[in-house]
Image 1 (cartoon, rainbow over the protein chains, first blue to last red):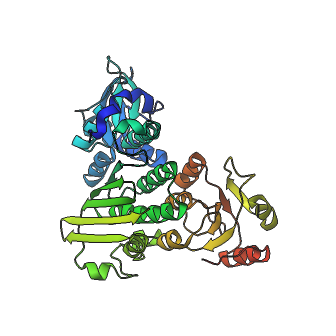
Image 2 (cartoon, one colour):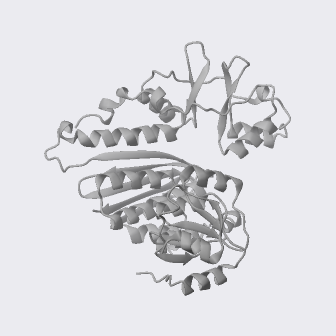
Image 3 (cartoon, chains in turn green, cyan):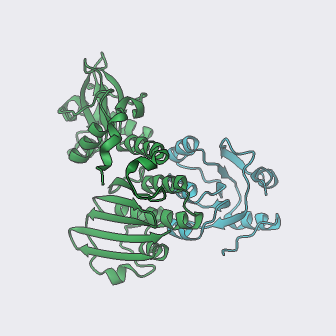
Length: 289
Length: 116
């Protein structure tokens, strides 16, 4: 089978980037950066000079560190990341994709040849771009070299960040849209959506980070979630309805009721979970079409 | 039943109006604040009453194709929730009544909450 990336270069960064970018100036304080991120609901911003040249990036990680060191009144200039990776508008989406994969960046500034900021992309735009691209591919299914036109084989991959409640639900909603486009029955989509959402929330609530991969074949959906995190000491216990190790703060939000894993199991036709305490958890499920 | 009728009958405040507001229908009602429970039992075109005000209620409502989210007891959504609901076209309603009273009024209008 061909490499999945075979046609990706036809999509460029320019086609998927955000053009109204929230930015900050280097002389502003880390406290101000924190407030802007909170209000705008974002996890990082390019730092630009008066001529809109990118001179750094300030992320929520920088804010946390400043917070730890009681340096929220320090200028952004002193705390920002200066070694910035960026992409050009005419770069292909695969260039951005490989940078995201290699460095796990939350965002990439898009700059012109003079290093002037023209846009921004995050994995969210790449996923949306890919989803749109996959829809196009559907029309050309005959070109994929498969035996019959009904054979589907698609992979969606999402990087999940522990503690990032803003982004929670994106994997489930993207997968839901893709399954709807393919024409999967609503009751199957419902099961897939519930399982994916719960698996996604488990990573956001408990783990440091994780990868959720959904493979759609002709007759089933296979979802694997591999996370780096505390792991589960006693899986049998964790599978019981009502058992949860979620902190009070999370419970107040209506999560952590000990229903996640049982919900996932109930929604799937095959369910397997392995965990290494202190390392992470691997979940694999299948849902038949 | 049309959501519009419900809004009028119960005197609900519309915080965020989607572009499908006029056509939106309601087929059932679900009252719950545990998101996993809502994920497991919520149905398409349900009107969902919850006291949760953070932005994750939007993901749940959108994943399950709810008609709208109704916040009881004069609760206000978080600022992020309000902004995101507008962006994602999710109807947010509020009322000064408790969830119990709202459920009773909706039942009187003929709506039911039986799960299949």
